[in-house]
Amino acid sequence: MLAIRYIEKVQQLIEQCKSQSEAITEGAKLISNAIKDDGVFHVFGCGHSQMYAEEIFYRAGGLVPVNPILEPSLSLRPSAPKSTWFERLEGYASLIWDNEETRPGEVVLIASTSGRNAVPIEMAFEAKKRGMFVIALTSSFFSEGVESRHPSGKKLQDVADVILDGKAPKGDAVMELPALGPKFGPVSSVVGFTLIQALVVEVVDKLVHEGIAPPIWVSSNLDEGDAVNREHIKAYKKRITCL
Figure (cartoon, rainbow, N blue to C red):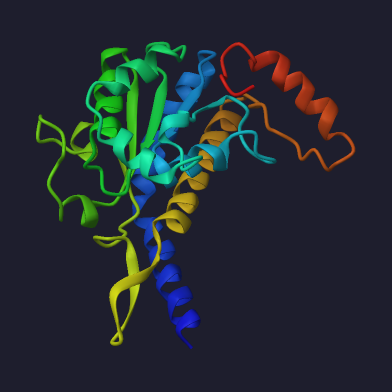
């Protein structure tokens, strides 16, 4: 059964996430330091990679101080091809950052499986100009198999301070059939969600071990959820754009 083979391939890639433990530890240290200084953790992606920001924002059981940068022009809505065009637009990243409050020492995770397009790369460059640290959620196999589309010739992983490597293949898809030309069955998202949630778990662990209880979103479907979350919103509304 092809579905089972796909699940097995995903399981293999998730198992390989353990090889990223050093990067997870390093990234979690940067994020926990920023949160201790009353900072927030920024997350950015284009197209489908916006899902990583959505995955850990306002999420039951997730960290409260997460600022998702969900630029509408880079969303799949209302026109998916538009997000592809804008992701390649040089000079756009600085305008995106100008609409966000940032502080030196804060961290941004930038997700791009290929790591080749102008906006994710320039988001990293611009973040560093603002004194921030950059974590790349990417795939070395994909990135090293394609040319950069940025004039610098660099890719996202070349600019980042920390690299979380999901190891998705070039093209992302892992399944194939003799009767069908293109490969199918993408894997970057399910592996990327595992890595970014593992990163958040490690951040929480570091803070708790230092005697700090980080604010955590509670499910709104628990009786106490609305009251707890209302206080979190009051505390972070000025720092988190989507609140």
